[in-house]
Each structure stands twice: as C-alpha cells, then as structure tokens.
Image 1 (cartoon, rainbow, N blue to C red):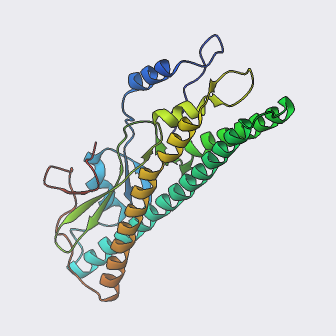
Image 2 (image 1 turned 180 degrees about the horizontal axis):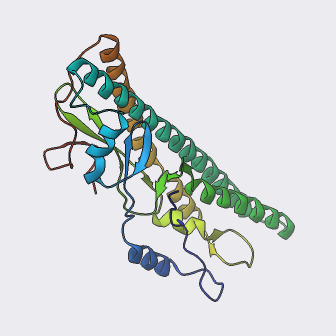
Length: 267
C-alpha cells in the first residue's frame, strides 16, 4: 500500500511550533513528490511512465496484437471506459474533500471574528479555540485523504495521474492533478490558533482568508478535469454503441514531447 508523507511538519524537539521559515526550508529539502501513478484496467497503479504500455496491454487480458481489429478495438475502448470511470471517481472524491476543506476554513474565519468581539469572556474564548482546533484538525485530516490508498493531494510539486486515452488514430495522455495543498497559508493555518497558550501561531484573519482563497484554483482545475473525463467517457460509450472499430494501431509508449498532454507538463 502506498504511504504518503505528512503534509504538516512535526513540532521541533523542544515541543515548540517551528517557525514559518523552518517549515518552508523543511518542505524545500524534501523536494518534489516522487510518486507516479497510471490508471490501467480501471485501477490506479503506482508505476513510472516507461511501464505504461506494458500495464495497459496486460490490463486487457490478452495479446492485443494477435486479436482481430474489431475485437482489439472493443478491448481498448472497454479498457478506456473503465479507466475514465476510475479517474472520475478519484476526482469526485477530491472535489468532495476540497469542498469540505473550504467549509471548515469558512468556519475557522467565522470563529476568528467571534473571538475578536470586545469583552468576550475567557471561558467563551476557550470554547471558541476548541471549536477552531476541531475545524483545523478536520482540515488536516481531509488534506491527508486518499482514494484506494492513493493520495488525493500533495504538499508541493507532484506528478499527475496518467490516463492513456485512445482517440481514433492516436493515444492522448490525460493528466489528473493531485492538488497541491502545501501553500504557505494552508501550512501556517495547520499550525495556527486564535486563543490560548498552547503551541501554534496566532493567526490573523488575512491568513485564514488566504488559505480559503488558495482552494479556488484546485477546485477550478478539478471541475475542468471532471468535465473533460465525462466528455471522453461519452465519446467512448458512443463508439462502443456504434461498434466503431477505429483505434490506435500500437500500444502507448513512454510519453515524449510529441505526446498530446492535457492540462500541464508531466513531471
């Protein structure tokens, strides 16, 4: 089973919360996430791009070169349908988690505003901090969420999930982003507080709102990718219903500069 690193740096040996600079340096030292995944046979597999062709052919359960053209085309399209459905399920869960994170960050901003009302009693402030910490911890749990052991999110740069999709004559490489939730504002929020003497940064409203705002791009990308995969799925279903025999003549190979990449560069 794949194991992802924590998105939140641990406390220092003294038990104190590390500085923002220390957190940034720790993240930089880790470098990009080296995990790579491909969707083949309707499953998300940990694999390097050089293994894609072999995995895709094996996922069809027979030697596609020895089958006749019609049977081979149907196998490729059925496999494509399963892969797109797996990608859609991954993105659906990612979308759900992003929306829950957004809701919890909204709750955190509301609690911060209440804590700044003049003359709020300390007992009430302790309750507000407890509620804030619960929201903060739920955000962290959601940032660690997985789909069938594959992380939905990353902390910094990562390689997208790959789907090799058959058009009528060539393979397209569809890329599914594992959203980067390691932004400075979200990382600071993960170590934040609004009241009390426990470890953590005292947060201002701007930091919480920046963390909330940092979700706009991941949500937008998620929705765009979902629309693309649904569109591709509709096309595959039409081709299966119409018994179209057109499909790429060769299995996909290692992605090159000539490969059709959608959304962003393959790392």
